[in-house]
Amino acid sequence: MKLSAKIAYNTIVQVIGKLVSTILGLVAIAIMTRYLGNEGFGEYTTIITFAFIFSIIADLGLTLVTSQMINRPNINQSKVLNNLFGFRLVSALVIIFLAPVVVQFFPYDPMIKFGVIVASLSFLFLSLNQVFVGLFQKELRTDKIAIAEIIGRAMMVAGVFLAMILDWGLTGVLWAIVLTNFVQFIFHYYFSRKFAKVSLAFDWVVWKEILHRCWPLFLTTALNLIYLKADILLLSLFKNQVDVGIYGAAYKVVDVLITLPFMFAGILLPLFVRHWTSGNKDKYFQIFQKAFDATALIVIPLMIGGYFLADSIMVFVAGKDFVLSGPVLRILVFAIGAVFFGALFTHAAVSFDRQKKLIKYYAITAITALPLYFWLIPKYSYFGAAWVTFYSEVLIFVLSFWSVWHYSKFFPKLAVLGKSIVAAGIMGVALYYLRDWASQSMFYFVVILFLASALYFLVIYLLKGFSREDILSLINKKDHEV
Image (cartoon, rainbow, N blue to C red; front, side, top):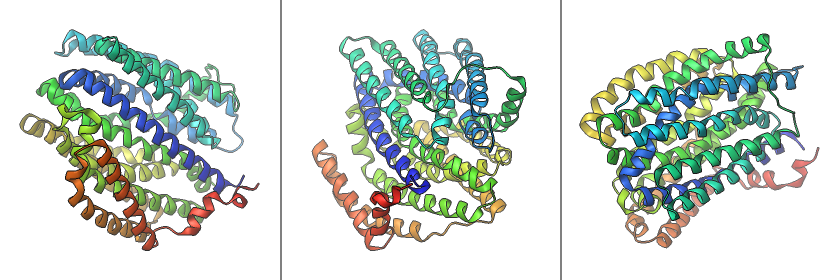
């Protein structure tokens, strides 16, 4: 199979898989919000956020480091993977299980403190998956990631539904999340055995190299956390759990969607590294341009559609108790655009092995965002949190874009982006007049969403944002020959 066909296959499978898992994730959210209500979902959001902070610190950038290390020529893949897995297990155990200790010093209810203990176990399994994700990306077999995620999400829906039926409360919901991540880990491990038999290893020479590559990403992640999760943490301290629930419901929708750009960039990272290190810059920039165009075609209509349908989305996803989450989503949906483009440019910087250069940009964002959170959240609650989140994501995108351009002198062509803006603008005009219909029932919402999408793709096709040849190249069997 040609490399281009492999990329197309992996992208299509991942997009389909992500679509299915996104739907399942939204179903799980719908069950949770209706069962737990504003306050209960606020407690759930606080628990997950608190544990997630330690999980992100424990991440140490290992998914990216794995892609970097196993894509080098003449590498002993088994040796590297075994040491990465051993390093991951030790670091995750040490860092993640600090969360149940630290939370005892916060002014939370006992239910929230106990919930952090359960959630920490869930994030341990999630962290162990990272080494396998890097392996599947290298082998261009991200369909394995998609399968494991879909199975895990299906179990999460079943577990959350069972917790609601049997009235197990918030604790039952949290244990369903633990089961989800454990199942995903088991499937990742099982699928990996076709490519490498991963086991625990300790080689101090390899661990030193991992640490050397990790610390810039670790510092970047720590700074990233300040503006990425400080919003919910500070909201839980300055306001009540109802406000956290309203903001958390909108943020959860965004959270589900922004996994797509990191998945897409993760598929491309091994190719970026390979072409850049081999000196094939023309091929590198060709792939990057196509990725930039694909991002524009997806994210622009997503932002415009999300803006006009925000209220309907939140009512249908979370229930009528969360109608106030609609205006919050209307702000956050534009942060999604910045995340999509930002993920592409930050991964490009990593492929240049310039992750250390990103540290100062994350530091600038964190240093400016944190005082804004302290100022705006007490005054404007979830609206203040949403606006600072938008500011932070836009700033990271702008700075990472500048970093890539400054180093590579590559500036992407903006023709497809411009066409996408025009097509999405026309779609937005139609949604402006149809948005009230969309809020009347799920049927009307789905029909209007379908019509709006069809209108966008018709206009973008007429503007030649993509061609018939682009579609045929993905399905032509000749392109898949060895």
